[in-house]
Structure formats: structure tokens, C-alpha cells
Length: 394
Image (cartoon, rainbow, N blue to C red; front, side):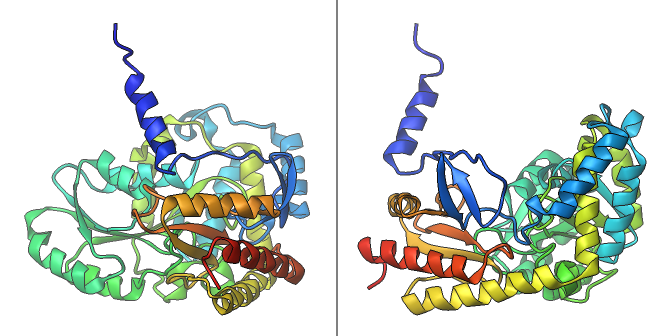
């Protein structure tokens, strides 16, 4: 009898042959500028811990106090017996932080998209989606059953074109874009996209996962960055990057938020965020509201590192944010580059197909406020050494 799972083994082998197999490393230390990875102490240029809050002492203390009071897990979905006063407080605080009327939390940014998109459009509707939108947006659109119509990346003119051709064919339509694109680090022209969305009377949604805590006043995100308060129908975000915790949020129009409490499937059918996560997120909001110090340090580090990498001769793509892609082209080279970095004491993973298009493999460097100047200089020294060894720079 033929092995019914042989095709999986064949596909895995092909990934290895093509240099696309993802060998996942293991951490055994808290997040920070330095990590212990696979038993080795290395400089961390890899995590989404933008503000260094994943191991912030105030957040750790807040978690400990909350666990003593509430225990660990709510042990129920939000709509039955899982909504705690901590959840409601976090939603109020996030809404205030984002400058919107209402917010609802989910278990992750991914589930926030899976809950939000199918609640707002269905099989008779259409979603107009940036061609480089995140996988969670793509999956949310597929779950909705709506027709997915892509427009050219960060191109409001092309969005106008496809809306002009297709909008009247559907009773409801929604435009969705990432705010900051996670692989290239570029920022969506949300002000221009808003103008096009208004013209065609469609719902406007932005996924601000990599914008929260990074852009806008004190890290308030892309809507704040473009002064579009009250104009974007729903902002989806994550609490696992700049906030340093885990969880998702949909914020914006209170009618949308109320509807998500009734029809957001991960909200209705999966247990609520745990007590430690909620308490940690609340402490993170406290820190962000008190001072812009961490956001300012993040951008100071970003400007320095990018300028020095370009001076060395590296191609950092189109990034306008702390996400810094080091463009290398082919996946095998990117994987070799990552291995060489690790051997030299720097942790930065390669990114290849299908996360990015074929021929656009890269090392994605994530700059953090946790990095000291000497950390950045050490990283630049290692990148230069490996880049010259592999012929990427002179």
C-alpha cells in the first residue's frame, strides 16, 4: 500500500533542496538585546520587541500582582463566562490610546483579522486588498467568502481603477491594507487610500500590527500618523510586537465593535485572553501614555543603524520604519548569510518564499529600543564581516 503521507515527505525534501526549509531555533532566555539561542549567547536583531517591553520590570510586576488576584486563565469564552473586568478595562484603555470610540480584544492579531473580516463582508461582497497584505488578512478574506480583488502595492491610483471597474457589482465592499508592511517596512499611503475609499462608499480597514508603538504620536499608530481619527472604520492590531505581550484588537467605529461582539467568531468560540496577558498589556499602555522615551529611542537606533548599513553598501530596500530588510535575492544565500551571522554571534533569520516573492529573499533586521549604541556597532561589525566574506559588499 502506498504511503498516503509520502507527498508531505517529498514536499519537505523539496523545501530543503530549494533552501526554503525553515529550521526553527530555540530561545532559553528573556527577550532583550541579547538572547540565549540554541544554547549560545547572541545579539538579537530578530524579534518584534520594538520597545523592549517584553521583559520590562513594570510589566512583569503587573502580571505577578494580577495573577495573585485573578488566577491565570478565564477558562471560558468572552460571551459566556470569560469576560473579566480586566478585559473591559484594557478595551477602554486601548480605545483611549488609539483615539477611537470603542475597541474589542481577541487572542492574537491573527485571530482579530479572522474575526473582523468575515463579520463585515460575506459571499456576495468584495474585498479590495493590497497585493502584499499579511497572511492573516488573506486568510480572513478567504474565510469571509467575499471576492478578493487585489490592487497594486501601496498604489491608490490602482485602487481607484479597480474600484471603478468592480464596486457596483457588489452590495458591500471593503478596502483593506496593512499600515506598515512587515517584510519591507514601508508605510501605506493611508491618507490617499482613505480618499479613494470615500469616493466609492466602502468600509475602510487597516491592520496596524507593525505601526502600533512605532509610528504616530507616542506610538499611537498609522491613523494618528496621518491624522485620520474618526475616518477609518476599523483598525486591527496586535499586542505581541511593540507591546511585548500577545493579543489582538479591533478598534474604531462603535457600531463595528458592537457587531464584532455578536459575530466575531474567535471572540465567541475561543477562550478569552489570559489574565497575565491582559495585565501585561495594561501596564504597556501605562508606559506608552506616560512618556515617548522608548519610541524616541527606537527611532534614534533605527536612523543610526540604517544609515551605517547603507554606508557599508547593503541594500535596505524601501523601508521607512525600524523594519530593516537586508536584500540578498536568492533564498540559499539568505539562509547561508543567517547561519554565518549566528556563528559570529548575531541572531537574524532569513526570510524567503512564500513569505516574500521568489528572488527577494532577505535578512530582516528588527531594531529595538532595547539596543544600546554598542549593540548596534557590534551588529554592524558582524554584518560587514559576513557581507564581505559572502561577496554581498566590497
